[in-house]
Image (cartoon, rainbow, N blue to C red; front, side, top):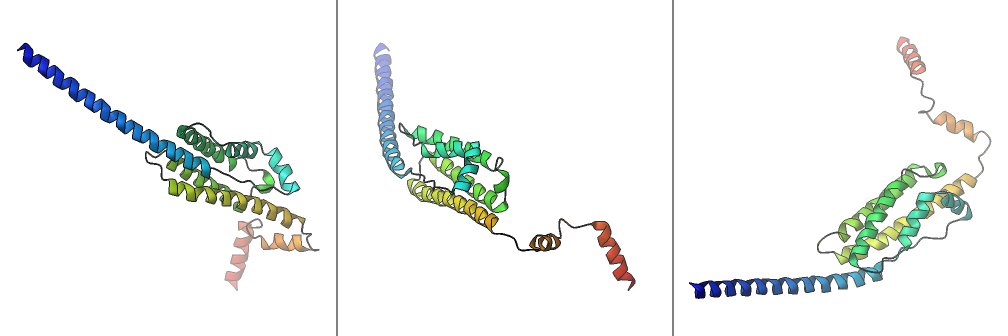
Length: 200
């Protein structure tokens, strides 16, 4: 009986040690793969912010959330893959606040849509970075797209400044107000005009 117990315990210990060796080998493979992924992502991780016009720069300097977002984007994680995962999470949170805090002069649909698109791409980056198997090709494709969105935002801001600098012609403001039917909509006046046209 004792021999049976000894042999059974020896068999169990052997199985446990083999299992732990397999787990260690698996952990080493995952660590090596993560290290390779970290190096590749570290090479790709370059975000570019164009130099803005002076008028745009003054507005951006007053926009605290944008400055924090830009600083966060330009700081590259140095240590591990989990640092990149935390970075994408922070970027995603900071991008969420951008649409809510847009300065008045830039609170236009075209700016808000670009910020929303940028936010969506950053959320995609966060999702890809937090997958068990990180798709490096998708991340390699997504980082230039994020750079394009940032460049598009700067171009849109420049366009707003350029349009603002164009002088209006005499009477243009009155004409634009007359054409803006949503501001001038008066339901009572509309009803009266409809009643008059019905009587004819």
